[in-house]
Length: 106
Image (cartoon, rainbow, N blue to C red):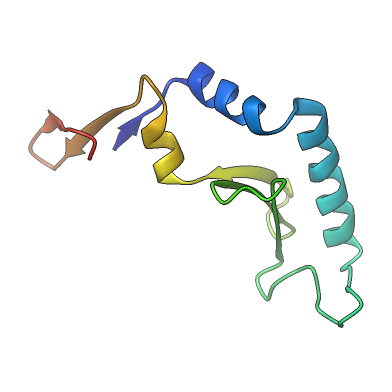
């Protein structure tokens, strides 16, 4: 399990993209998903499970995902575990049914 400080994550995301630009990407992704957008090659924006994804300005460590299936139809920001582990206050814990042990990040 990783314990991540919310402010660390917020600052890391804002270094890569502004909040306004992130909102614009989310709105575009939602619109393209709702309209079941097709690109010039005939590829649909939505996959078979009703989800669409978009990388954030070429970043390999975060992207947004839009899901049309749940009633709330969320747009989620997804970040890699590597990015979370690189944040300054992240702590790693090993959780079993018997105990919780503080681990080390590799």
